[in-house]
Image (cartoon, rainbow, N blue to C red; front, side, top):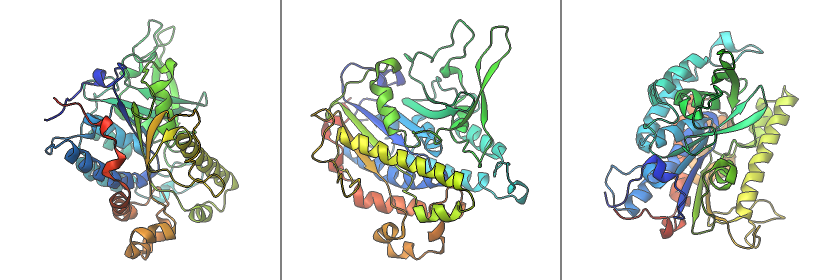
Length: 389
């Protein structure tokens, strides 16, 4: 190798060296679209560092954050897997887990059997792999939501984190949580899967205390980019990375911007579900607006006709970070712009759905086409290149 490969603890150091964050959105099986984009980024960075097939995104990024399906990909990347290997496993997982059953297509019952998902996650990550274990080669942040307290939990393998180690009061440290179970919790989307129970304390009398957790996407952080930035820089999280356009790079990957018209048609019978989806979409737009507002961003998009791309605005007068956002517009015109033949597919009307295995091939191709169009070598400043060995 022509560059330094850091340990997990070295990735978390706060000695002032430039740091790199990768954030991966939730979105069900649309995560395969993210993998199409990540393949391009992996190839670009491998070539940038004059590396062979041994290059991994876990070498480049000091923290990889994920919510829901993004947590699956983030965990596998943090283990040092290549994007190609993860893509193969993701296709297999999607086909095995998202099988429709008439027995489950009834109100108040999860649409899919979580045991199939549990089996796939145990196979992917290993039964004995913990969040704090040596199998994770770089920083990992998974967003989950504790249902019984209503609070989002950013759970990480940061060894300096306040809740990383087991406490004297019987509280189980985050580092002891099985990785498969943390990721399973982050993928427990309401209606699709049952919540996941995680033992969080031994209890004062030795009786285990559990928390009930659901998909981190049912929080403001289905896109975990802002949470990852806060985790890396706010004092309470005990990471302490420096800010600045040449000190911090945040790369955010979407799972496709869903077509609102398709969502309305699928949720027509439920005003409550439509309202929830609308709130989540508002959170996504707010995240991108705030991140563009505080950053230097060559990928900045037009937020709306009133704000434009915020090129003339900076929250603090100087950028707090360098920010890259890659995503795909899943409306007909957005898909057509990437490939006319794709826009004619019979699956076009359901591309925004999160649970259609038959869409995976098209979504993966869309991610690759978008990456070929949008991901440029110049997006990644040379100041963030890995130091030589």
